[in-house]
Amino acid sequence: MSSAPSWRGWAYGLAVALLFVALVAIAPLSRGTTAPIDTAAAMTVRIVLDKASYLSGDIASANVIVYRTPSPSNYTYVWTVRDSAFRIVTTVPNGTARFTYSIPLNYTGTLYVDATVDDGKGLTITDRQSVGVVVAVMALRLDRGEFNPGETITASYSVASHVILRPTYDYDVFDSPATSVLNGTTNESSFSFQTPVPASPTYVFLVTAREGVFSTQGLVAIAQPNGILLGVSFDKTSYSPGETIHAHLTVTPRGTSSLPTQFSWSLTFGPLFAAFVSVSAITTVPYVDLALPIPAGVGDGDILVSATESNTFTFRQQTVHIGTTSALWSTELAGIPLFAVLLALLFIFLLVAVLGLWRRIGFGGALLAPKAPPRPPAEGAPRAPPTAPMSILCHHCGKPIELTTSKRPIEVMCPSCGETQLVS
Image (tube, rainbow, N blue to C red):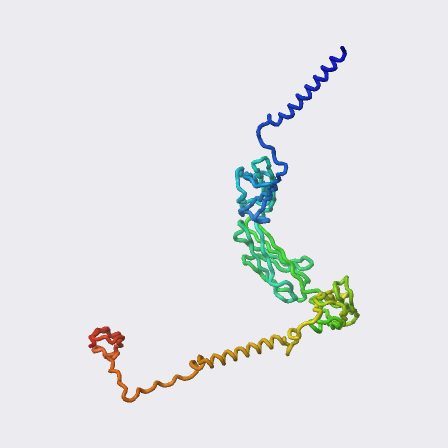
């Protein structure tokens, strides 16, 4: 008697469980017929602008590149441009992969360009690029990279802008203590500054271009030559394993730089901090001759040689060739490579041979030999009948009239007076 309620309870629970499973199974079908997104599908969107920055009034151009797997789709593009305050200034809801935007002449700041791409299958990706907008940019250059006291420095400049079209230029030149040593205003595209003697170690050139409320600036600096150069020369262009490299090292100050009273030299194979053979010396003069032996086990090829002078903090690296080389390429004759001399002699020999052959086959003789006079006619040979005269005198002015044909009779006109006459 007590087992009946228990059986009905189990049956009721099983029915509820089956109903829940059925509802879960048919739930996706009740939400429509849209196909689910392929879990393997992926899409990447990237905006490419034609410039890294723009001028006010420029036309900005952008392209969107879409990378999608497993296969391409028909995309829908939505473009949006926002200003520095993130306000929408333009939007294109049904655009293409390429987008252009005309920047207003009165706008400066940052532009944010958004591209939203929909593949039509449930994937929507947005990319954003930001770019700066300025009213103008200036080009400013000096006619030299460094100067000596007393030399004249010329500054040239120009402005790229859609707003500043007829600029007025304000210029200043500052010395090392930031004191203005030259200033002025001009409409020309250059000005010059003569450095004094003695001169400041450096000068700064500042140029401002302005028109109305708009302006832009350019600034460059120039200094007197300074620093110390380390020179290295070798006694040969190539060496064999076991030979010794004889090198001459020297340091030369430039401009305002000065040399110490003592010099510490070194010459090594390999990089500065990984040398496997080295030689060093200390001198009180700014030059030294060093001998660096080449290890016998070094193979053929180019090897790095490093030279240093520690007290002036200078170093130099260059390569030398180790191994056998053709004497033809390394030997010199009066400072000219021997192979170049031999090549020139070969050219002269070939030129003489060609001229001799040319004369031998007769072309040279035909051009250079004088022409022989024509032979007189043989005795008793029939003579051709005399031909009709090829010129006559004009009956009116007496000037000659040249005849170009032997046809008779013919009517001709005098080139001098214009009269015509009949020639029989």
